[in-house]
Length: 97
Image (cartoon, rainbow, N blue to C red):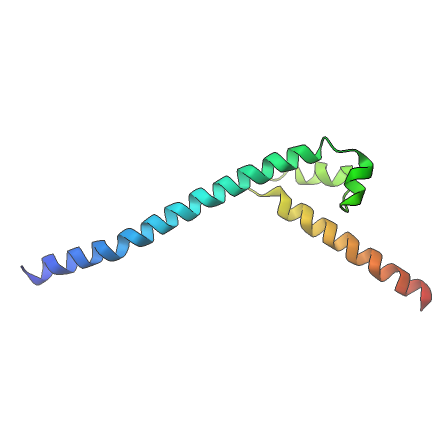
């Protein structure tokens, strides 16, 4: 066996698992985005009171709905809800001080 043939087989053994892992990660990410989009559409069916319980308002859903198809809307909604919760926690401190 020539050195060239041995090197080619070694490279194939090293590249194949990396390619498989990248393909699995891509499929996993696509599934997660699809699943989160389905949940996002279910948020539209909630009442305003239910949305307020999780720190959102109906206008937040309209803002996030404009994201591209491959984007995960739940990440953006989470950041909106967290920012709103942090702001409400800081508000009483301003009134006291």
